Image 1 (tube, rainbow, N blue to C red):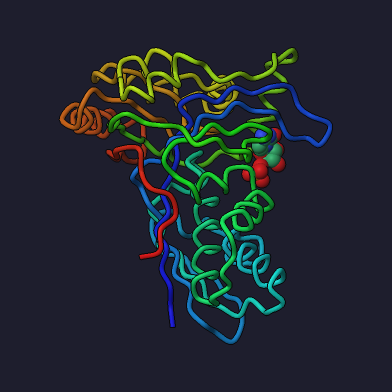
Image 2 (cartoon, rainbow, N blue to C red; image 1 turned 180 degrees about the vertical axis):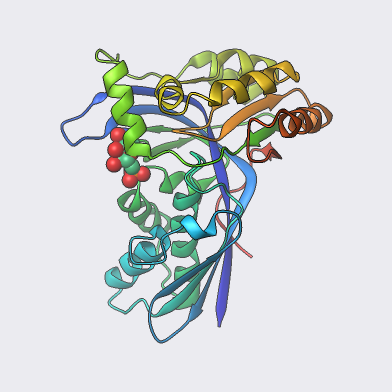
Length: 295
Ligand code: C5P
């Protein structure tokens, strides 16, 4: 027997970052928006826990117990007094190490899939708890839609979204390590203020106003990502020149994200980005997308 779960990528339309905490994490005001690029995670009963992965960048995905999908299966199994004897297959479409929560998506997907396969019947609260143990972005991968994440990003308040937003995502050649980007943030921002969500940005989401969202989007990690990956400046400029309402680095990068006025404009921006030669590929996607869903 098998269960397949589809899980969306995310973009942070606001990522406000405070100073490093004693535990090494940073307090955030993290406005997550789920976007319609998906990984599919299939779990199948097996003699032991194994992981395989296919799709772009699959060769960079660890297939051992450090994979968040494997860790999710083990955490759920341990809590329910069983062994995690499943084969996990990840069909990857979310850019790997791209700042779009691809690894977190696989963790949330495997968790939901194992819960269904094993008939564990874990409550939503227990699933969210396990997600938070797996990583700061994993609870949002389960929930989807839009949410404000506080604490290290794992404490979620779901947000209303008043319409569809049209995006273009440009994965870069290569990845960025999230801890390295946070370290660079600390170096560049010795006196970071306490993070706060922007009321104007939350309004823009609520009313579905792309122009207002473009005017209020902000990523505090962007200077650090650009410092470690300077060529992203050219990608951002290429998308802006092609008519993007706003351009920013997605999360810790190096994927760049472009907000478009409508679907036709998004396609034009994607074509221009491809022609610019400043990115590996360019993908259009709409938001908000649903969270992890059993297919
Ligand atoms: O929670 P997660 O394992 O995804 O975090 C990966 C790394 O990103 C952490 O080890 C930390 O270096 C950094 N991080 C942070 N503050 C956060 C979230 C992540 O410093 N709120």
